[in-house]
Image 1 (cartoon, rainbow, N blue to C red):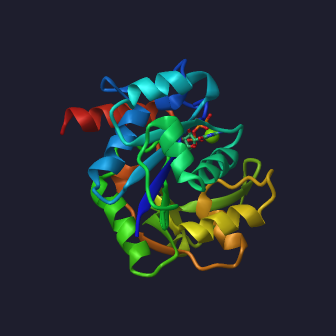
Image 2: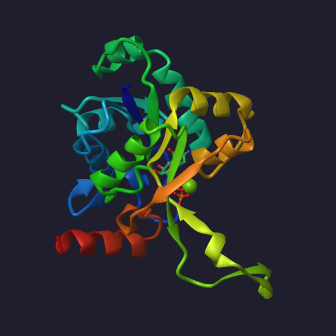
Image 3: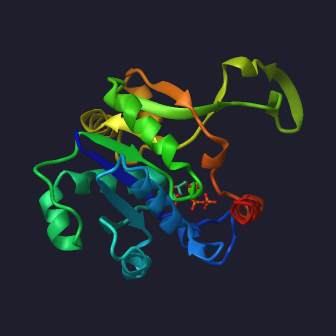
Length: 237
Ligand code: CTP
Ligand code: MG
């Protein structure tokens, strides 16, 4: 079974506010998207990678990622639209290979990972574990961590209730799917559907999604604080 990874990297990085789209912000000298892609390739579990970036940065991204088995395309206005475009591209692996210099194959991959560029320190072992869980027969797999803080439901600044956190999980990427299932989930959702993760669309179809243990290092770089933490972690490694 062949494995493709889709890397949504087309966001603007508003909350990071670094003056450039987040995926292109350097983290200890290496752009975030390059670190994310190299982690996928180092896992040894991924055969091809499709990276979606802001349209204005297509050529720049191709230069940054040069020499890797990677196809680069323009993303959409929302993450969901970005992933939808990348999945459409996977339908035509030979076209992709011809246009982008990426790998060619005998047909579309069987398994697809969707992995945020914004999670540049994700351990390759976690990536391999997600792929292994899909290979083991789970069509939809997400890495998840328990919550440390107490969680409250609020209305404005007033607390309404305390949520039982024992049944809650914070979900990361990569999320792994049988490609046919993820395509069906995107096809079943409207083109304007918005989900903050891909498993959410699979859940809307009533299909089962399973969790595996996540890893704190797969945290998402969202704010300047996160970028600083990522830099400190790299200094210490
Ligand atoms: N993403 C994308 N296309 C979009 C929006 C987001 O490919 N239209 C990607 C981001 O590049 C990121 C991942 O989805 O790798 C997770 O999104 P998020 O952390 O929200 O990144 P941004 O949207 O860039 O950040 P912000 O919401 O602060 O603007
Ligand atoms: Mg966003």
